[in-house]
Length: 152
Ligand code: HEC
Image (cartoon, rainbow, N blue to C red):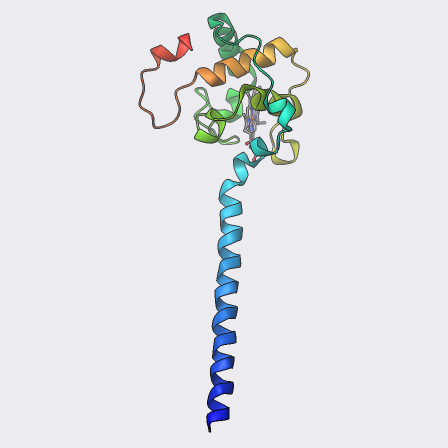
């Protein structure tokens, strides 16, 4: 009797462990899925991430970038970069916290297999102007005044 009980409890323990591991795996894949939209931002080479925007602090660059954005990006990312039918919001924390070099690298290389085109045909200064514009945006949900953003 004792032997059977032991064996039974071992089987129960193995089953419980199996269920735990199984659900842990499901949780993992769920987390991966949630973060995947902006995952490319974390895969940019360190050296590219550290590149500084040569136009930083130039209000004209922001204005020029805004025009370029309307021409090339708004179609997918929405008129004010809040996200559209084809592209995610660029006011999201993941984008706003990315370094200028990271955004420049994404523009240069795209995320083609996920629908984000390559913009290397735009001259470098124009790509930096777009980065300046993106960095001037008020992040989603911050509720800050838009007017102040132009000066950044
Ligand atoms: C044809 C539609 C389309 C156009 C046009 C487009 N994008 Fe995107 N963009 C996307 C999609 C789709 C993603 C999401 C890619 C992903 O899942 O990683 C994306 C992602 C991004 C990201 C975040 C990186 C990431 O991995 O999600 C940035 C930054 C970005 N786009 C900037 C721009 C800028 C700036 C322009 C204009 C020069 C632009 N995009 C034009 C579709 C587009």
